[in-house]
Amino acid sequence: MKKLFTNKLFYTIIGAIAGFLYWKFDGCTSGSCAIRQDWFLSTMWGAMIGWMVSGLFLGCGCYGNSCDITNKSDSNNNNKTEEK
Image 1 (cartoon, helix red, strand yellow):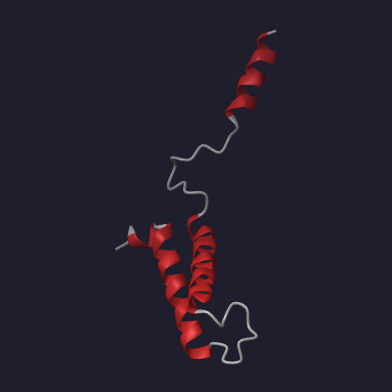
Image 2 (cartoon, rainbow, N blue to C red):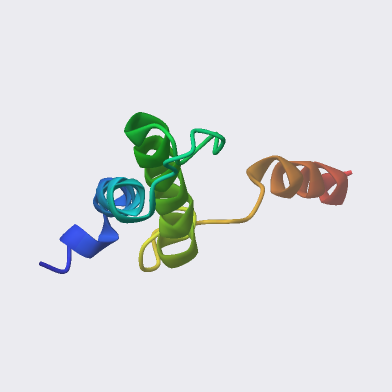
């Protein structure tokens, strides 16, 4: 179950469901609302927001100590200047 919450697809699907429910219960009946008038657009916007929110919780995709955020090209350049 813990692995499910570390998957971006999970948040995207939850966002899509939320977008569809937003259209279903608060949709635009007048037709002047660009996003809310069509269920497809509302669902896609919800999915996109869910995907973006997953980045807040999951970060760059580095879990535990397996992520090296140092720039290897800079460290190689520093080593070359120290050797001279």
